[in-house]
Length: 190
Image (cartoon, rainbow, N blue to C red):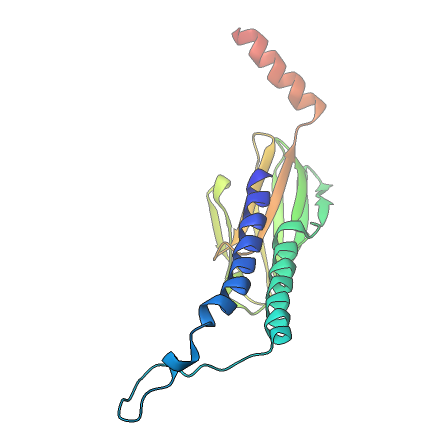
């Protein structure tokens, strides 16, 4: 959480610094800008901009940064619990401009089948990677690709596109039975 606040503060400060410094850097004495009659120069000519235009461009830039931050950091994730069918937990994830749902909830110790239905032709979403389970699969366009694995420990495991831009989470929850089994194993060893 601290990293998010640090990143937001850094980006806002950087945007503000660019907006304020743009006007002061451009301030150069007018007589230094004009070459003498015999002297030629390759420097740029100064173009005066109204202050309201500078402010509007700066405000627009800060607004775009804010929208990007909201999109990547604060937009709500869509969660779905996997359906259980004859001991297999199943969930379908639509791949279209991201992952829908981007959070799948499963139970520890039961096999999981994730069906990725790719509809987006962008090259970024050509593959899915689940590094914690050592899984990397290509996702053919307009086809469903199934991935099967069995989570052995509760926790959150990330899946990403091939370029690590789009992300999702597999949330593995412990059942009461698995908690009791873990406690029994710990007490037997101790």
